[in-house]
Image 1 (cartoon, rainbow, N blue to C red):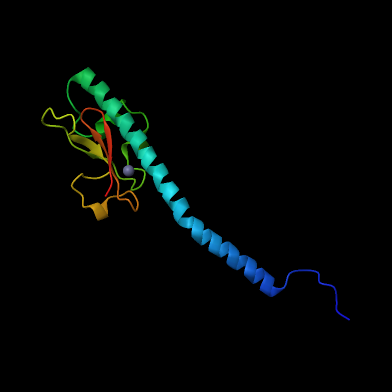
Image 2 (cartoon, rainbow, N blue to C red):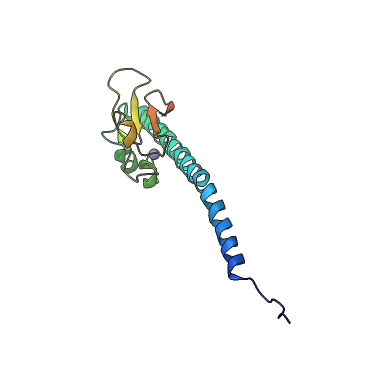
Length: 141
Ligand SMILES: [Zn+2]
């Protein structure tokens, strides 16, 4: 006479673990992509804040700072984290616009001439930048 079962067999457990592994492998790219989109959104918000701080400083002093850290030192920005890209943690690229071009890149996650494969944001290799006129731009390959 057979003994009544009081648990799972090893095969049943392995099948359940395999199904969980397959599902998580299928969801990983979607989760990773959502994570990168969140970082890009946060970088855009930080660059918007820097743009507003630059505008306030221009109104006050009539000139761009020598670097974006000066915005923090002069208290136009109170949170130091805002000065850095969310992906790399490195301070944003900054360049004073020389001409009157409102599309000139002032601030970005990396130097705008960085090769597409070396840009910080994800598989789309986005370059997020702030323009002299205050506009935000996201360039993808
Ligand atoms: Zn960034």
